[in-house]
Image (cartoon, rainbow, N blue to C red):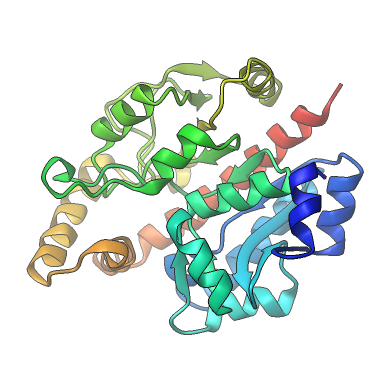
Length: 311
């Protein structure tokens, strides 16, 4: 466990025994977020998904560390009761970088976004994080200035994020431009095309294609050894058998976006609204795809974490 984690643990960080022992003994650990549990999926699929993701990571030889905020502490790893709380409690706060001081000092329950999970992981000394899709520049972001804090966190925090690309609801071209400007490598894992969450395609390329977890680990080691701060996007397409067609999902997204605009949905409420509406418009198929890609990302993230610890 790193020095910062040791200094902070008594005041702000708590660890499950499993995660603490893994970190102290230099074993591979994969961070997981809680927003996908509290805001991304309905109950009980959210709890089933969370438990399955942890099992998949263990099967690959790594230790899962689901991160969330409860009782004034950043929890690095959750027990079963805490996991249930994130999946069933109403009005769980959605936490990004700016929200940490308030949520911690108030003692509220807060689910960590990609950005917040990266912060928690870095404080704990965890280098790999598995999620569904990263946030990015929202459509019409050039006028609304709605840009996810996930992107700025990727530019400053040394955590690799394994994801199925950026959420399809976003402006993927501008999202990739932002990442390029801020020096964040976008690695395609077994793909030369950047995936778009529900679909394997987006029409945009990646910076580099790598086909083995050991190659990804080598790139990450080299980046951080050079002192090049910031994370990396490991873009891992949803398995073909679970993917939706890009043209089909694009039509659904446009309808959901129009409805959000008509209903004046803004800020943090936009993404949960869109995901729920897309699920309805696809008769639940989008949720099935979402779950499949999260499982796939967990597997690849664990393989990368194991490779990072290999001699």
